[in-house]
Length: 158
Length: 381
Image (cartoon, rainbow over all chains, first blue to last red; front, side):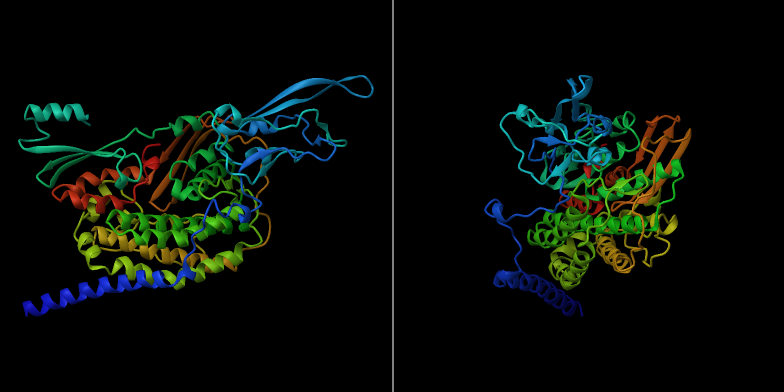
């Protein structure tokens, strides 16, 4: 009785191990089921979804114009103080002083990609880019100015 | 609570904590089996555990205090960093608490999306637990099998929410974006893949004789102890304590979907293991019911630009992958909370480790820690 149970247990144990090994060998012989991606060799073919949150960027059109009015909504929405808007006074066509953005400073090293600034922006001036390889040798390189030099606000954006 | 120095002092003096011939060893904070920076000071007599003392503080970011200076929209993203494996569910709890204060009605579409995302997160979290648990016990292959399914969920999340781990998808009033057009197709693909592959889990790990003998009758937790230590989630349900918040206090549309609360009565590590394996199948059931029945309509209720909660106290709780998460907000009527307290499941589940580990062998400690499913940033906020 005891010996019968003993042998039965051993058989059940060996069987369970063999079932597991069979599964492992199945993948050893079925290469098509393997889903490993060879990053960074596949970098050229790598496609990220359009909603992927990688980095805040400010799109410019061909005339070097952006849509940012400098309303500071993104600065207020950011939980980490990632965005800082610096103003300058510009003279418009009638010779009046007008407030415009000088620099929109973006600290990538503080950003947590929470998307709250994009949600807060009333004029769709900023969006998330699909970049993700952000590593640099110096931390200062992560502080970016989003508006390009010499850029100005697009006509019709208030 | 003793510090290591005091224990060593006690040991030198022949004190209460460690007797002659006892050995004090540190597991962690950089131990691969602790999944993070958990530091355990273990008093050993030979190979038998006399005492386990968890030491916290290595990943303390003072999230509760940080939240006091953030507005009601901003503080939700921080909670993704608590229990990072169920980030959606954490965000959900916070968003629900703010909505309770604002008395906002959530559109049915947003409710369905939230429940779908919660259940997908739960599956992903249990997948990772399953792979890591098997790896702790020496089986390396299951980890890759678990990640194959988990990556599919992560890809779905990436497409709809824009991130793989810390999504910040739940906002007060609903969800941030509408579902991606591919969402339904890809979830159905995942369900197909999962059903084709689920038998591998049993073949590789559950039925394995070595695995079973390392799990059965290891770390037995009785139902009374589970209640008195405040355990929740699969840890308590493995001891037969009915504590599923989704069933007991249904939120969103959990009262309209059909699923069973998974209960096991063994109380040992194997029972906790089986609860999680079966819970994944229940989550699959919920996703299957909802994926073709997402109501049309708005995905976000209209809320004011600046949220102000009325003066008072608000508490909501949800069932995360690890147990009950409670969010308690004290508001003074301003734009920032006066005080936020999170009741995290991991902390209570960790506190039971000393109780179940006493008297067992050191090698079994890994099995116990694995089945408690500890996520350290959740314990140590």
